[in-house]
Length: 241
Picture 1 (cartoon, rainbow, N blue to C red):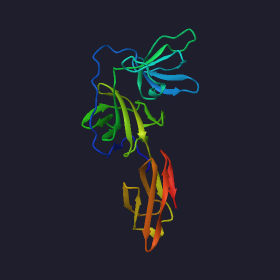
Picture 2 (cartoon, one colour; picture 1 turned 120 degrees about the vertical axis):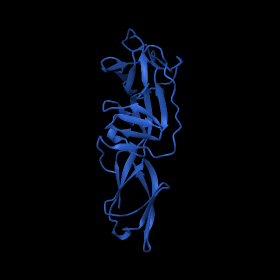
Picture 3 (cartoon, rainbow, N blue to C red; picture 1 turned 90 degrees about the horizontal axis):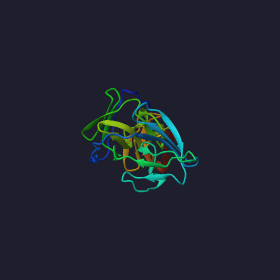
Picture 4 (cartoon, helix red, strand yellow; picture 1 turned 135 degrees about the vertical axis):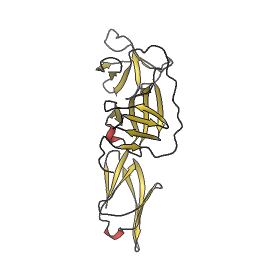
């Protein structure tokens, strides 16, 4: 737990990841845009240009706007979330977009669990494949812009890239911190959290990083103890007395 510097190497430690990289089309790139925000209440989509000047623009859309998958078939608005890459059509008479299409010029990998992020080298390694990653690469958590320093060792990622360049990273399973207080009675005994954490209580205020979720926490020592359900929220610290 605790703060991480940009020089930290973050390593995903969960089950082995089977690469599912898709081949990138060799045809000339269209004007590609990365989705930064999909605001369904205001019916606007905020896009960042990937090719060119990296400008950020916001467009309105309407029922007349066609949302298409990478094969050109109509699909749900729910498929268009931050981090994905699209092309856009012309503006209609009411200034809304005529269409938004998921591009086939990028690859996407879901449920990335075996990875290593090295900010000092500007590199994200997925499995055994190395990709370029830098401070400007958009990172999303809960579909809002975050930072590479928010990526924890237990996180599951969704990654979008083109060739060997990472275009976006989304934290799909986040992490939080459990802080143990008033632990004198249980010092040097064990605490279990769910089925994935079993460790010794070493100090007052001890912090344990866990994936978000609800877990039973159990302590016992010298005839005392008990079990209590605790909730770990993404990016927050849960204090357990």
